[in-house]
Length: 82
Image (tube, rainbow, N blue to C red; front, side, top):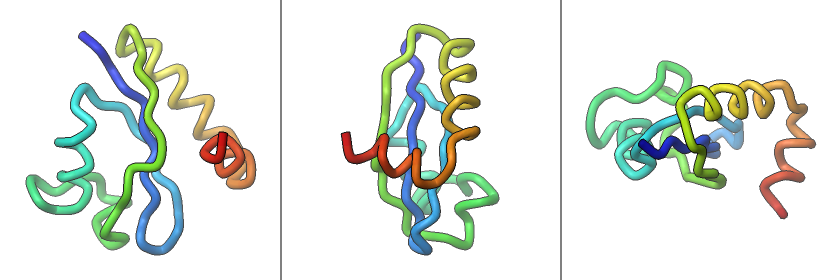
């Protein structure tokens, strides 16, 4: 199964990082189109997908997600402009 690490930009310009097997579905969930999404993005809609990367396993995705979450906001923004 293919996993993705993704970053969405919220309406208040904050960034949210997560993992999923279906990016389209997950962004729709964050935007409240289906399901409820994450508690963090609930009040920060709409969100826009700004980054995604394929990973070979859930374990690899979780490790990469943790690395991204440790980055500063400036480092994340620099990563998004590459």
